[in-house]
Length: 152
Image (cartoon, rainbow, N blue to C red; front, side, top):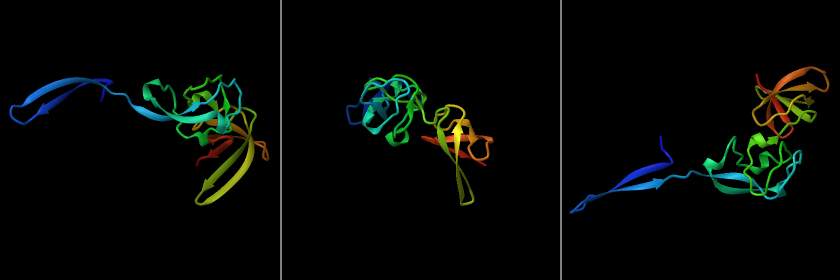
């Protein structure tokens, strides 16, 4: 495992040879989505509020968002500042009370219906959704903004 602080060995095999140990610091740089303005809790995220930037991984806490298109239309769960790195924990892709599209696919057959989210959810979360037509509550996985999917 690579640590943040390391020592590497440099060696010259030509005569007369030499050996040198050099301390190095390793920083992992990742592309991430950041805010271009300050927003308040509950604000709907739009494309003009976002940009991508390179940042050190050690400053990212939570699930990194690397594609702006995945979060456009989501709502902020808290106030976000200019230049702040956005994580999935900062956003609500499906919020309680939202009308969502429920999709089911199996062996090439795809069916879609609408429902009402019973809980907040982020990408990959399993939430309860009330099917608007049948009035039954189902469990579905959040797959995108206002979209859930039932897995078999």
